Image (tube, rainbow, N blue to C red):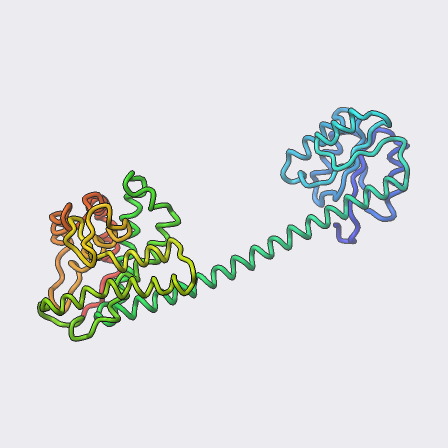
Length: 365
């Protein structure tokens, strides 16, 4: 619509009498623009403000009405214009051709005033309705996006709070969480096209792994401080209690799944990582003693990421090792503690690991 809230109509007809008749019929209700040939009709239709509807005579000179229809429909700027094609009475093949070329409706000569007015009003109403629906759909999409973003931020905040709580009990900084989730993503991207891992490492799943990784040690909230913070070697009994952090983490996330009545890839990854990140590739890990492919992919990635970060970080029971020492120790554990392909991926992503460790290094104490 133009500034006067009148719809703009473009009338294209080679016969001056038809132009005058149509203009006189329509100009009281609409703003009317006129064209006497096909090229003029195309030029006016593409000018801003564009017409809201076009009436085209099928037999325009230089470029007939069918060709004008085709060109307007091919242009994204004018493809949505409703086109009314004017054809001689009884020429059914022209009516069919007009519809095929994109005309919204076909009106036969001789023109009847009531018919022209009704068809024009109908097409304009359909156009307005389509525009309103498009606007409402866009508004709805914006609302859904805004709501989804808010929900995602809230979920991320809860995940981060829970993960930070677990790490705080272990006297580790939140930077540990930042590092391991980025190590996991670096490994996942290296293995994304690997035949053994590709089925799990879609872009969507890598995003879920990033969100799930911070929850790997959430079960530590159930371990007594005397064991969790003990500076020396744990006794056999204490170590058995420490092992239970994997079970506590698994049970916490499984409880969420049970409460919700469903699961998804994010919850599955979180549960797998919490329960199985202490498994070893040769079957000597805990809590289940899984080996090789029986260990979930997510847990195999976390095993390398978590051990690397533990090696380069100061703990109550050990000093921090250098990057080179950590890499060598993990390389030596390939095929025993770690999946060899995941170790190879780490070696490929070594520079990324160093950059992540530097960016999120723990504060000096």
